[in-house]
Length: 106
Image 1 (cartoon, rainbow, N blue to C red):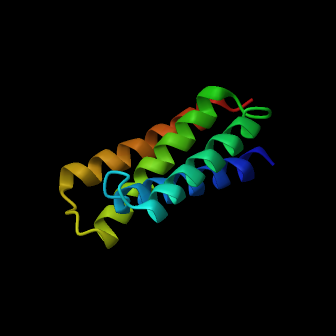
Image 2 (cartoon, one colour):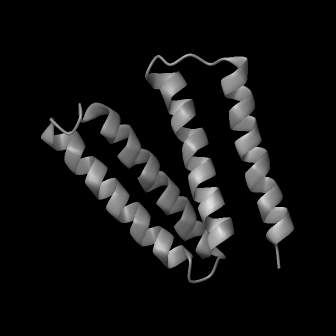
């Protein structure tokens, strides 16, 4: 159940961050409200996740997966470029999360 809650927390954080891009510095009401809602849901689900998962593992997955997802959304939908350096950075994030999970499994 912890990993399912964590997946929801990641999805909400990614949605909130994406909405933040469209909030134009919080000057547009709709995207600004979606940003706040996304982060509220994300933190609530992350807090629930911490009941069953270690904080280090949960936070590494939450932040790493969110970062990789936002980078992919930026490339796919927001016209951001994908360089070899950016791709390597995303790969290192994913590798780091996997290593933390394998090393921290109990």
